[in-house]
Image (cartoon, rainbow, N blue to C red; front, side, top):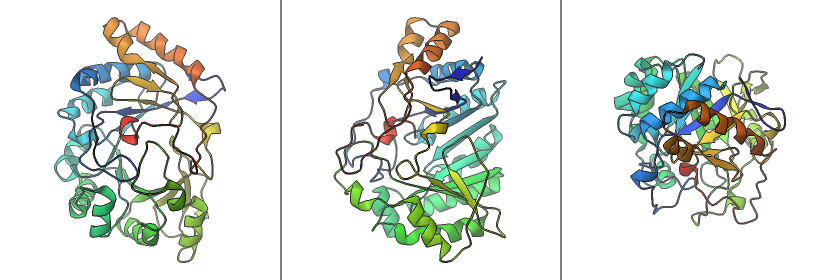
Length: 328
């Protein structure tokens, strides 16, 4: 059984938020002062495992665990082990800010996680602190080193680039990636949630601008490689690293979208840039143990997946939820 939306796109990739809480307060992701969900509105790990199981039975091949910061959710490793054993699931991955990796990298690898994404926007300690508000760069770098030693097949950095903030570190981040045998995706900021810390229009940096900057030092060649995510990859001769660009504004990728998201309160979000959603928590708690009913609700939800998102950096954000509530 396959999940097909109204535009003929097959949905094979689920991004699942484990928690809306985070130990960082990144300026593009959330406000400095945040109110998080009460526990009663948050899915239990058992409920998340049940929903993940239903999705895999419906043809989902990849699940990415996100947050907030997923590694601060207590006992989430037990869910990792359960999901990792599902027949039909080809890949289980995690996106993390790296703050807990030094302690948990080996445990995650032993539980079956093969690939890892780490958010890292700066290699300058002071700038990193300003961008994350609460983060410690050295802790994250130690976490990345621990992940390398744990033997993950691939580790990718995610870097949101803001003009006038960290665009002068694009080459530094790339040098670090190449030296350490990592991958990287440069990301255009997404206008989710109302922020006052910076003007998104003025700080916008397009993927094309970044490629021009990189080309001043490295030969950048387009690659035909694809993953289940939205990155479009390039290669630098002589290196194994993949250089990706996620471009929701300048190079819209909606025509090939194969992704859906589950928020930590059980809301099945059919598009990152729209509010089309279905409350799976309500189905799960009203009909406990009735997986077929849950699966039917998921199948029915495909009919409301929109064709695309429309982001406008010059207007107030139409999507008021922050990224921490979305699941990456």
